[in-house]
Length: 79
Image (tube, rainbow, N blue to C red):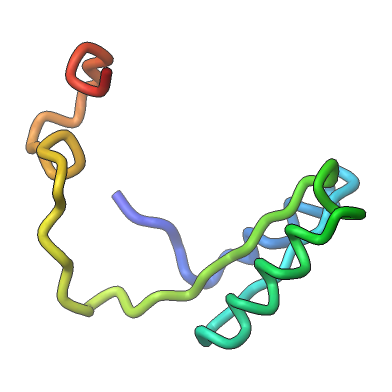
């Protein structure tokens, strides 16, 4: 399962009286996070749509529940 990179998920922010932005670089992400965490924005919905390289190498996950083959939720393993 994956998210479609062509869908403008950031538009959900304004649809719910919030803010949304799409970022493609580390600098844009840093600026978007700084904006989101400004005191005036802390009670406002913010959606940051982060474009990532779908074919990049994945880091090994520290927690087994992040990479398990069984995709059914099991809350006991997450606690």
